[in-house]
Amino acid sequence: MATEKVITAKDLTKRFGDFTAVDKINFDVNKGEIFGFLGANGAGKTTAMRMLCGLLLPTSGQATVAGFDVYKHNEDIKKNIGYMSQKFSLYEDLTITENIRFYAGIYGLSDEQIKEKTAQLIKQLHLEGKEKTLVRELPLGWKQKLAFSIAIVHDPAIVFLDEPTGGVDPVTRREFWGLIYEASARGITIFVTTHYMDEAEYCNRVSIMVDGRIDALDSPANLMKDYSANSMDEVFLQLARKAVRTGD
Amino acid sequence: MPSVIVENIAQNYRIKKTVVEALKGISFSVDKGEIFGIIGPDGAGKTSLFRILTTLLLAESGTATVDGFDVVKDYKQIRNRIGYMPGKFSLYQDLSVQENLEFFATIFNTTIQENYDLIKDIYQQIEPFKTRKAGQLSGGMKQKLALCCSLIHKPSVLFLDEPTTGVDAVSRKEFWEMLHRLKEQGITILVSTAYMDEAGLCDRVALMQKGEILSVNTPKGIIGQFKKPLWAVKAKEMYRLMNAIKEDPDVESCYPFGQYHHVVFKTQENSEQKLEGIAKQGNYTGMEIHAIEANIEDCFMALMND
Image 1 (cartoon, rainbow over the protein chains, first blue to last red):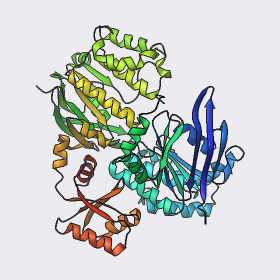
Image 2: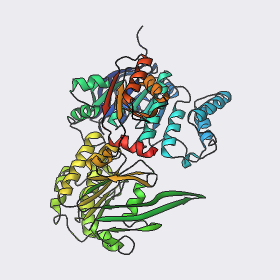
Image 3: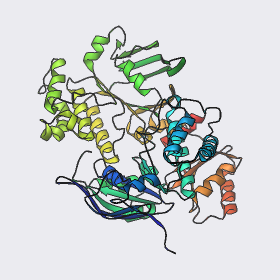
Image 4: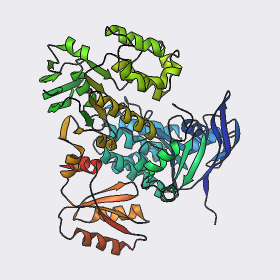
């Protein structure tokens, strides 16, 4: 049986004027896979991710996300994905349960489902007794873990994580990856960008973008073998140093 | 005489009724010409500390000197002799690259030409864009311009608050190469970061967490403080393996590290045999067990748990 593809991209391209931000990228992501999407600042990661989230129309090429076409069904894509970044996460002036209810409500969960999800989430994150705490009063690490759990509250086919662990202490960073593993084991596909190269090694497969193209795509172990490197950091440096473009 | 002396500095913030202790009475000193790293996650107190040392914030208690000057009494002298690059981009967005640099040179009663040697290496990389407005530069170029502006008056001490946050691995490496060239010019550099792997690029580091210093030492010295045997394990079934290891009552900690899990046992005896026992029970494929040396992140996590 063929593996179920949650993302397919074929010659996906985005041009802004005469600048080609994303240049004919090709890749598939399998169901339940943890897929690392790496690249230097300015390589085109954000633009590619915005197209896959249904927020930006491609210039040419094809892509489907959760079975929906990025040109025709971008609204369906939005309903079937989760998204979280370091910058945008939760409403600081709402409590923990209010944030859960808000997002779950937006994604169309019923009152009963919301109640069930809230109880489950509070327990999983050990937040018992803190239900009425304002999110602003939580330490950053807790906020990030809560934001991730809320991003997948509607059991999306895929969740996009844009540098989810920046600035977080090393223990919390690992607890966060624990949540990612659990979600992946439940069949949720994880699409993640990070500047921490050790985190790249937690991914099943990793793609590395250079100047709008995907220059490498494989499991971390194979990439390290192909580039005769001892770590993903070395692989990344070898590839990203070839970049002609600078900046973001 | 040390470049920076910090003695029992404490700082609290009050948000409505809750008091947040940003700095809980910390002390350390930085030698002349040193690259001194303040390493810690968000909320460690790094920015509060930098704002106190750059005379932008009065500490609640404690004393500190920079270049022998007191941060409270002698703030004017300090402001003349330090460079400060805040975490948030703080140059004039609607002035051009060159205008920003000229502006900072002028307020410090100097000219771009006078200290051009110091910034030449860095400025040459952004010079092709010198007429572009600072607000329209890419992140990497903004960072280089901010560094030039903080250096233009040839400061004796340079404070860099999280200069590499959100910066990719290649640009981070280049930034640190620039810092080492500045160090050769005799400038003392205090630099904060949340990236633990950058600790190894400093002469000495203070590991900080929640307003406290966990340890001050050379990177080698910090690693030397990690006394327990450390094991790196891997198998094809990483997640199952981690759960199995964590369930063992003799295990103190098990954290994922890239392709491996790092494992520490509560007692040192027979730890390898214990690991092999866990491996056998779980019937894993491609199981590997290696004894390894701790890195800064292992040390930081061990200190956090103490």
